[in-house]
Image 1 (cartoon, rainbow, N blue to C red):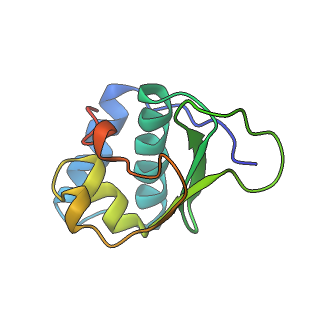
Image 2 (cartoon, helix red, strand yellow):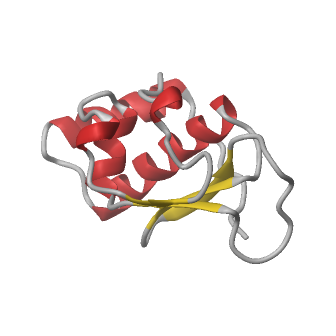
Length: 116
């Protein structure tokens, strides 16, 4: 089961995003940005009916719906880190993103982009 992620404080998130935008982010920065943005998503859309996966960095369960307690949730969305960051920041539209999505409620467009 995916665990709950908590977004970073605003100043830390801004510094990470600035390094990313400048092309200076390392793997640890990329992981932190992915987790931060997934944490924002889980706050914006609390629930456990959809699992959003960004391997190898993190996954969260979000979006209200049928309570899920074991195994794979009824809906799974998976994408790479660059796609997730672009979607979450509004630099890529959901319709244009290359994601693997299955099940009810797997369209994340109502929740994106996220504010950080």
